[in-house]
Length: 471
Image (cartoon, rainbow, N blue to C red; front, side):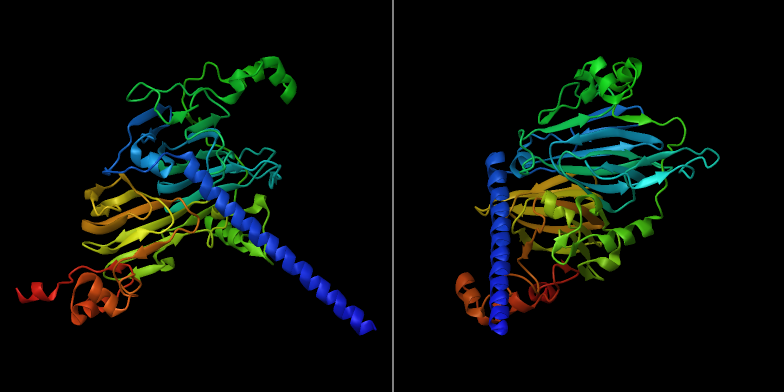
């Protein structure tokens, strides 16, 4: 009797577990489906007839640096549902605290600095009454949320609506390029990127002298529109301090210069931070770590961690939500590519994402082909330019004499490519007779198509066809 009851309990428990997994799977499918539908609703149709290498169209100057904006209403950005900004922060420059209505990915191009990210409801894990970063002869008591050091090659992910600030504690400019995903389902306003500052008075001094289409709200800080007395009551301070919050007469711009070295509680070394973040990030028994402890950055400059490496051609490093779990939340990913002189990346298409390519060094020739077989781009792409490659459009990259390096921002947290040539290609995985009949070629030619290139996706220079060798 006891055994029968025990077996019955086990049976009921298994049914309960199965039902839980079934509901979880359905919830994940609904979330994915909803996200895809929202992205389709949020943007216009991609009627791309031609693509162009894009550069910033507007610069906003500040006391200690500047912001450069790409035209968010260009048809390439409109198709992908994204916008892009480059930040240049001079030494001792502080990019004032702000948040936006869309998730973002930033790639650090040059310099070093610290990034403060303020997750709502999370504890102040940095607390001290003596030791501080900066002038060690001066001590002070403070407590705040974790501060992260950033360096060249870091990709930093931020969710929608999370306030953050950046400080350049180095000796050279801190430069980063940021892509905002305005079509993400977390943005429930409109396709425009809206910047909400918590300090400063962002009186724009741009090259065009006009508000950039597609960018809204880069103006006064949010305290400006609140009543001074209400502010004073809310913070428990005097009205003079409350007026300071509104920054009515502040003309320094969004990046201000810190007069002395900025003091805050000192984080540990870069390596120590990264090791602890990896140790505490990810999934434990199927449950993700708390929102407050999510790892926000990953460095893509380490060649030893490349996903694809060819000593003659170059290397590719991908960053998706399997490596950085927060990307699952913001539904973005990145790819760092390096091609050596005259190296070639196999022709391929992006299966499930748009690709926003920013050139970090060198130059290369790119060709992009649309669904009608028309060439929509065939030209050179050089440092600091952007090219948007729409989903499923075929693209091939060949490095110039100086090599070619890029960072690609992709609108899916697990973006995939499908090569057209090489060991993993669609052509290689087809039966020979399918190729023979599809292209009206001989069996020998079909075998050459399948097997002549044995590399993965990065090819070395110098390959010549039989006809070229005979010439």
